[in-house]
Image 1 (cartoon, rainbow, N blue to C red):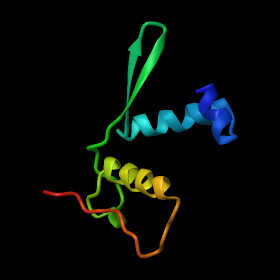
Image 2: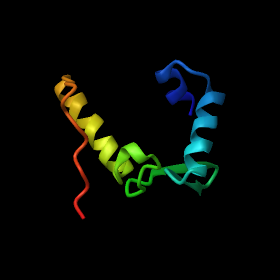
Image 3: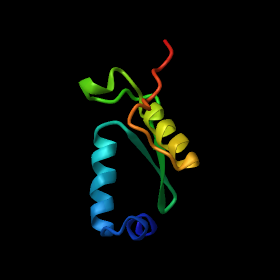
Length: 84
């Protein structure tokens, strides 16, 4: 968590709070691994927002990863819909 805090320019305590919130909401699974923890993004979890139109966490992450690889963002670009 220290590395994430440094990368984002926030405190480690803030990262811990965010992780706890994401876990409580079901977006992040935390598994004990010896003295540490393993963190897994629950990519199939549907975003809890009416504007998200039943899109998943994985859809959101894919959108940002795709945009980050091209370094271009355009207002008309939308998050792809999930196939049913």
